[in-house]
Length: 186
Image (cartoon, rainbow, N blue to C red; front, side, top):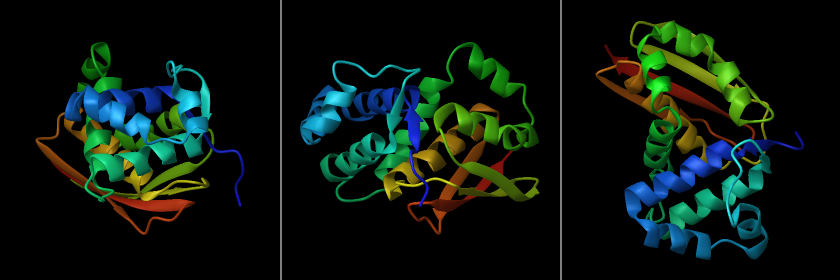
């Protein structure tokens, strides 16, 4: 088993901001209130964007999202991932995204992954106009909520880079790997 997977605070911070934006501060408070004290202590009083946090923190937040605002569905994390990417890639970053070709996004996916996660690799294969399949491996402790959030972030990146519409779905997810199927219209 792969040990010591951590996630950058920026990913956790934007996830929490996305919850507040989409569901309100009351929902965010309920989600935080449902976390175990040791998990809550890691994110309170605030999440440091450049600090590394154990993946268990993100996993616990996504369980709470599923239970508190998701109606028992992991897919709510997908919606939150879309909003979190909008938060992460605002201002001048959106201008840069608009100037990239879709192949550049896939070519730089590993570099982006490394800015959010301490371990793991992502490879895009079967790339064509309007579609790609990504395989993420080399992680541990990821749950369906985290994978859905990752898919949502990539879906948002496609839209932010100029796609008229996009869909990124999680396939064959385990705690250590997942496949992402991406489709988009230019």
